[in-house]
Length: 492
Image 1 (spheres, rainbow, N blue to C red):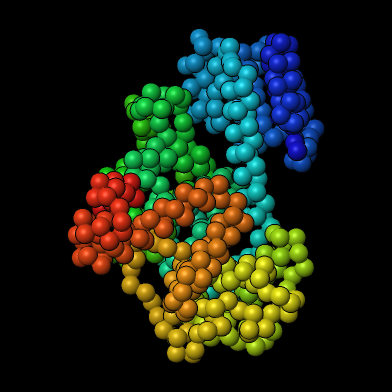
Image 2: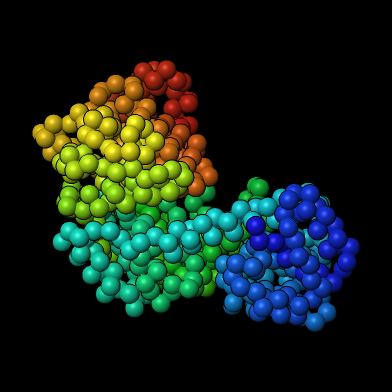
């Protein structure tokens, strides 16, 4: 693990932090001035540099703020924690505009300081994993005419900073396209920040996007940068934009039109140098007609539109995708990659894949774990594929009616439809959980619980034609509970 660099002219501060971090098995390296740090950075390779930089704000030979500015120029992804005395809080807050991860007031509580540094390390590691995946991932796979159109679109946009709207069914790989647009854009050296606007509760989404000032609301003990500031100089990917609350659509429109925004509880405008890429599985034109989406925001986002084809529209790509996912899942699990027979590939190619590429990837994860032999035969395929007749496969491939974004995992629907039993439903849940865990998601429990509860409530409301009390009775919960859940899950 790369060390935490500590910069402070006070030997006692360096000593206390070094000992506390070493007790947590976190290696350190200490410096007495900003000049020493800059010299060390010039002589280090990317692999030998710091994991985190913790710097005092006032030191001889250069301030922590100057050091922050120079470090951000050379190492924009390096988290920097600024230490400051209470009298310097104004300066510390201004450091956030230069990209500081957090500030640490002096005198500090050592356990809290270690906790803050651990949080910065985790954030750094997540960013590092995302960058490695992005760098190591092959170009998007696909030889079908539909995917070639997508590739041509990405190529034409490679020298542009224009706003892009990506449309397509759930599981078609919209975030992958957004990452490719960023990777091949003039902003490639900047950060790529993604947020699923449908997965965050309405009352938290504003702070998540725009950040908040200290004391803006209960629990806001420090200023926090939102996703727009985190994406400074790079790309912000807004997934499931069609489900953004109406009042936040107004704030987003203002950012896109004026180029600045205000943190929650803030009075100073923050400039946004960010390219926005949005995505949705919904029909935004219909959402506009229904009054659920602002027409002016739609036109701001719909500058260039890229439509991703469903997997059933590019069935010729299924064999190469399946082999790629089998290789990838074997690498993640540290096992020998499994091979797949032509007969099994033919069965896969005939399946409709209502969950699209994500469902195929989940199936390949499942096969890597569950298939008994190194060669995958048709009998080894999961129930929803093995049991599907050509007619069922065609039916599975027909577009489903528009669903609520917090629906059950895409793989769970075909699994349940194929077998109609509890085992198939549980297999779908298992596959979705495995996919999230392998991708390093930290909130798998919350994600799946929200989607599970949402699907239960929506199904019960559909069954009772919207009558909440009757739906609560059928589910075996109280009417106050269902009302609270509807509000928490944004199902109004």
